[in-house]
Image 1 (cartoon, rainbow, N blue to C red):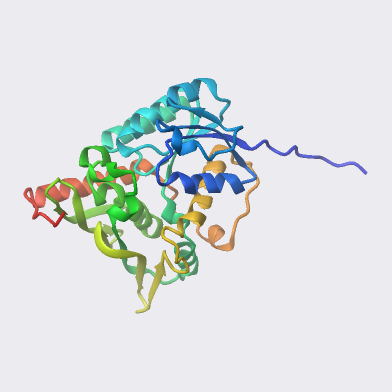
Image 2: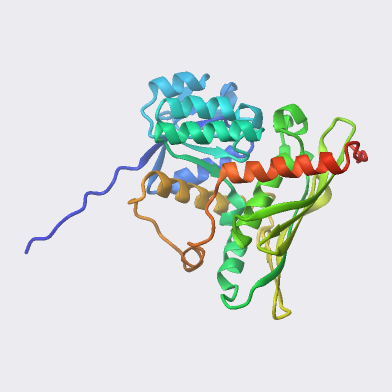
Length: 333
């Protein structure tokens, strides 16, 4: 008896550029993936990759990595202000890119990268890890199809000094792109897109900046197809709170606590970055074998990750805040 045999596709060869505080989640996802393998790393500080297996190639310059390493794709995990240049170099070298949010610190940079990727015919994927959070996916999957959402609230609150670790560039507005709106805003606004769709209008944005110009809080009001959305961001929150709450037309309220079941600091990120890598591999290799959960299947029609769309929303929020309050009140540093 004979039959057809489809050869198993070789794992996607991935290089990681930048080994900051989030890199351990990317590395863990790569270690357990049957569809992608870490081939090379790049960081200015050799201590960051001292623990890696000896077969992983090491570089101090991303341009050398792109030139010399045998790669199909790269994960870009450098400070926000370096995203545009590093992503451009990777796309020019024909490497698919998974970049940490935000895609760029300016909407102009995000547009240039998106257009360049289109011209090159190379995938450009932005990592919005919260859309792969299990409670978020479960909430989206159990929402009734015949009952509209009447309001949505996303809370994204933390103490940034605890989360930044040694990556102190988060607290430099020029390098971060601003503050909580520039860095946490993309994840929160991506969740609004995930639940309400792409037709979003910014109605109100109130920022509170500290003496260094870092926006420490942001209160955002948006509308999608007549449905109001509220995003509350806070970098001075005592502890951590990450939730999505929906109000339904029948009077019910349903909530996803992104931190539920995770007592370890940043513990939810372990499974979220498995989802990031899985989606990136699918984007680069659509025929790759993937294990899809019931909730992933249920949310397949929701808007996908779109770095440019979110960058445009962030820019619109900053523009609205500056228009409505050109001299916002300072928040405690």
